[in-house]
Length: 326
Image 1: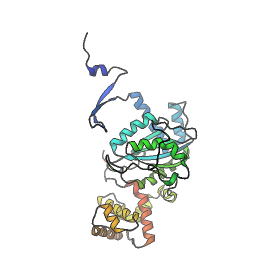
Image 2: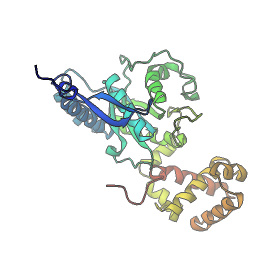
Image 3: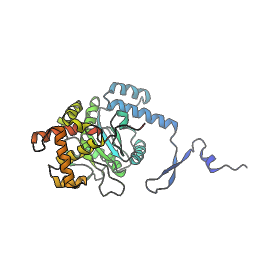
Image 4: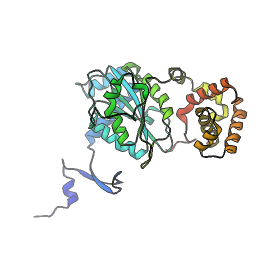
């Protein structure tokens, strides 16, 4: 009988595998993974597009598309949008696990929603069903302790935290930080996404492999509604206040980082310099330049408040290179 190679046998219909040259996150060596079928790929793309329609507020179009592709499924009554951030390779691993384990939800790459990317990181937008009859099942015990993964925003009401515990745990397992927007009616999904993006400002950079910092999950239930309201159409206001600091140059980015760190520490120069990893004199020079370029005084409480609001309004483009890669 003719001998079939292992590769030839593996490529038979129903038993397809593909050798990935990409190393495993755990072993560091190449591994054999099941190939994603064309049908699964198309279904994931369709589901991502439905999620994008919901996130953009086009819920009627989303309902129509859902009815065509999955007639037995209905648009959720209530959703929470969330923003997951991490290293690109960990985002890819999470995306595979999330799609396989939580098919009732929607996941979209943030760039597909025109959300500016942070260089060196990748982001996903999750549109999560939070209807009362929704049950989450992503392979993690829903009763798992989420202390340390959530903040005090849910102390008064553990319901949302308990329902989303598996999602939070899945993000934590992949070292992804998560900002969770407010629960809203599906037609208000863009508002939930806006609250998640505003809350994501506090996340900072995601943890690296081997980092002592655990992944964070922050809630927007007690976020900053005033900032979110301004952010919905206030980028121009932020640009006007910051002036040259709103540009996408490396120098402007360095000055914005210095200003944000200085204001976030309550004006403590020594602590700010330590966090930025610069000499105190270097920080002083940067702050003086910020005052010259913006025409503001960091000694004025009103000016500090205005600059902080402006930073919050333009932060989605920070950091962002002047030219996006093709």
